[in-house]
Length: 302
Ligand code: EPU
Image (cartoon, rainbow, N blue to C red; front, side, top):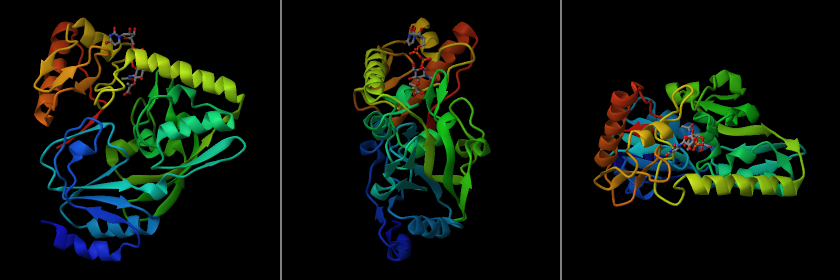
């Protein structure tokens, strides 16, 4: 439907691609989601500027995403354009005590490189899916650690195509969020991680240990979007949902993970509505039982 509208954009691109028939259920970690107007894989920064200019005054919602690991997509995505930083934004360069990582590089690739080059600081991030860009925007982390704590500076682009160098404080990182997540005003291009020189074997052992813990406590092999809810202050969403008796509770093809109750798993061809209904049911049950209102950590795109 939009093919002819986008042909002008496509002809202006140097190397980037526009895909029209992508179903996001084949692309997102939760394995749900229909066809957006287009999925654009940006391969160079000039093309990103061209795409942003093109969409400026059009009635289409732009979603910038990495690997779609923290998003749940509906079937009605005709008014959405998904922009993803492609292969050329996968670069990782390693310095004495730092790493420069492009936004499209996978966080796990970066974590593994820290062991290879003896750079300590990101051991806790072992097993967290998604890209560097996504991790920065969501301020991904575990209990006392967050990605933005380790970042010295980053190159970003505004939606008007201006490049800037900013520091994490400029995007107000807090528990699993930043101002970018709220305002959708800038796009992360790359970031410099400040790390510490350390023994390679010790880092590798820490990674293996952290991965084992994750494997034992989270449904890593199943289709999910990670933790669905933020932890309420001083509490654990997983524990609350578990104590509410909801582990294994099923709606259609989606169920509350029996391994960790803050995960919804798509274990039988779930559709978007199965997941939304289950989210609502969990929220209502926890509110009734504990008088605690759970807040979403994942982003719902509908
Ligand atoms: N618990 C239960 N039942 C469950 C799950 C957990 O009783 O089904 C209990 C555990 O036994 C433990 C407590 O709840 O006593 C906390 O559980 P856990 O250590 O698994 O940590 P969490 O608070 O549930 C957080 C992050 C995870 C991160 C782990 C790392 C949030 C919302 N979750 O989980 O992040 O991997 O710590 O330990 O901040 C994510 O952000 O997507 C995510 C999974």
